Length: 161
Image (cartoon, rainbow, N blue to C red):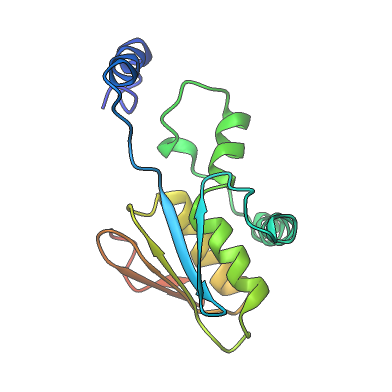
């Protein structure tokens, strides 16, 4: 709450208090099944054996959607850092990594199905819509609140989540 309100000093105090008490937040995770195996991604994850290919694919599709006019929505990055750092942080969200992996390993006629333990952020939601349009792929993301079925640049939630 403090971060969202721009009260960085108060947010820092709460984070320090949480650290002192040993409290940790659950990290956002995205899961995708392929080859009878569940692949798990977290923000900035580079532990996957195909990490280099995944990041290359992600950069490729992000480049395509930027050419189409996409601008990152960094408002959900609740850290007091420069805009460029926020864009870098948000570009590596777990669902984006899972989508890139799905684009690499699934047939073009198959939907990419992802499960996420938290709510999808606005930037990832907009990104998934545009990827579905540009890549001509169906992407289904089940977050903690609802199913989002992205196809042809539109989400089944009507952009209300």
